[in-house]
Image 1: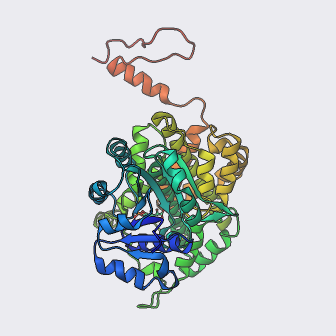
Image 2: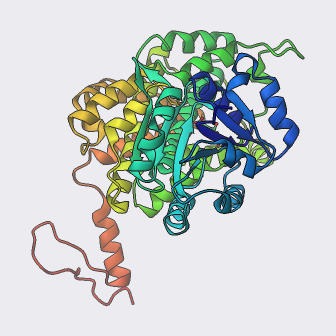
Image 3: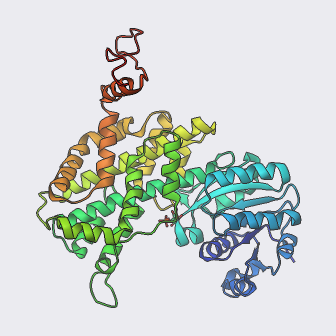
Length: 469
Ligand code: 6PG
């Protein structure tokens, strides 16, 4: 029997799709699932790919089925299950074998597991995989972290299964230890902000302009032909067009406005705070999800203050499109700035242009604009994206519309937290003389914390010394 070239543990939706993708690209694969019937069922349903699949009933069988040095992908829930699986595999695997965690792990856990692997073996890679079920089956974006040599060892398989942008695989090595999972978390943070901004603009169309779901769908479909072309705009057009089979009403109108979240957006925001990086659009998107789940409190608020007046926002669809273009650039600029801050703080030289290139296909945030971002970051990876001439020109043309939309939202009570936070960041980023002098004066007054003077004179305190006590 041919030995498998790789193994995979965890045949849930994502694991099963990834295993089929691997088999389809010509790599014999051994699979194991906690429930044996699932393992056998997987092979039985693999159709033409069944010959490439070796179902294994025990972990020892799985290890024995793979050609050494072995590589085994874990597709199990993040957290303790990953540690449990590593602990179960360690005694069965050789020191130069490799475990690859392809779940949405917290990158600090990946750092810890990489350190443990260096001490006790086997080798360990943490890879971020984006693209949902469809991506896993036909080509996800893959962000790898760990030892470069370990990445290189499995790169032929990962490149083969990854999405392709004009023939180039959307898979790349991001850096040591948790770098791949860190980049995936930022991907998800951007995903949250991109989705939230689209939802906010949807809200303006629905509640401010009184448009139907079908009309809104047409708008998203039209926008998907222009600068906003992206997977998220495309699916927004599709979901807005769908009809509920139970009620016959637009599907969107029948979905409860309480958003779920598995925590990757929150991790991104927490990490940004640790790094003192400013990602307010992403923070606002996480906040909006948190608040969305507080339905009863929102209903109580509406009972006291009334809902925002329906229909009456004086806005054009062209202004909304421009606002979304500006918002999108600002949220991506914040995400890339966070990666840049982490690169420096963790001493991980994460390749910013490469990250933009990997995100061009396969992942949830794939979009035309990411190609322009890759170009801008190749020109100057250290420069904030909003300053790259291509995006600066876009912002110059679109931030006026963003202001109009936010102002109309504020006047009619339509909440636009991600768009507004993006704009506040933009305005702070272009203000040479901010108001932090007042903060410094206050800090010095009440705590004698001292300040720097604009004229360079060494006196660090104001004439109020002693007043704050
Ligand atoms: C992806 C997605 C994927 C998953 C998110 C959903 O890149 O393929 O981001 O990882 O859909 O984890 O996250 P929430 O449940 O937090 O929305």
